[in-house]
Every structure is written in C-alpha cells, then in structure tokens.
Picture 1 (tube, rainbow, N blue to C red):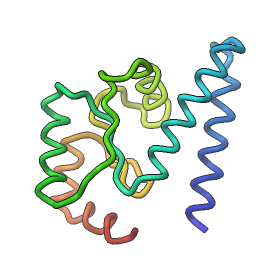
Picture 2 (picture 1 turned 90 degrees about the vertical axis):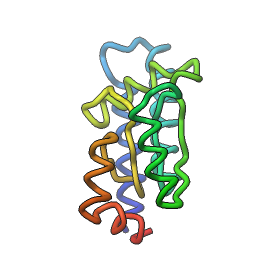
Picture 3 (picture 1 turned 120 degrees about the vertical axis):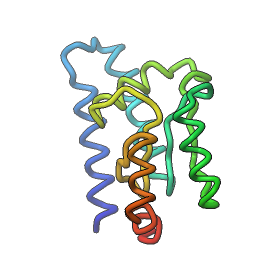
Length: 131
C-alpha cells in the first residue's frame, strides 16, 4: 500500500513539474524527464545518493555506507550533463540543493550530517531493516 502511494506521489510530482509556469513546452519536457529520472532512482533503489565525485561530505557518506557493508546507488552529478537539472529537481523535492542527498527506501534522509545522526540514533538501521 505504501509503495503504491509513493509511486502515485512520484507521478504527481512529475506531472506538476511539467506544469510549472517558468518552463516552456521544451523546458517542461526536459524537466519531466529529469524529474522522472530522479524519482526512478529514489524509488528503484534501496539506498540512493546524489553526490559529486570531489565532495568531501559525499566521500564521508560513502565511507559510512561502506563501513555498514551497504552499497548505495550513487548518481555523481558533476559527471553528468544533466547534473544541474537534477540538482534543481532535488531542490524542489527536498528544499536543499547541497550534496549529498540520501534516500533510503524512498525516504529522504538528508545529507552527510543527517546520515551520521541517523546511524547514531539507530534510525538508519531501522529504515534498512524495513525493506
């Protein structure tokens, strides 16, 4: 039931992003495909992280997952032509433009400091166990 709700929410977000008045028709199509990509990454992977390859906070988050023997699906924004557009979609979804942005089982965890706090509190382990 929750999965169906998440997928429905993803479709609503994609549809609404296509209707944003700042986008022309071409911009709406590009925005929709980028939004669809981001939503697909978030909801198709147990752990999804939007990162930049040179970012020390991203490297720290990857290290934490490695220590936990978890392998996130990582999208390196600086290595993609559509990286800035993905960052804009993340801003719309999370209210943050910074990296890393981490999602576990479709739930937004936050950045590197939020990940550390979730590990320390046991919240991350609970989220991972619920999959």
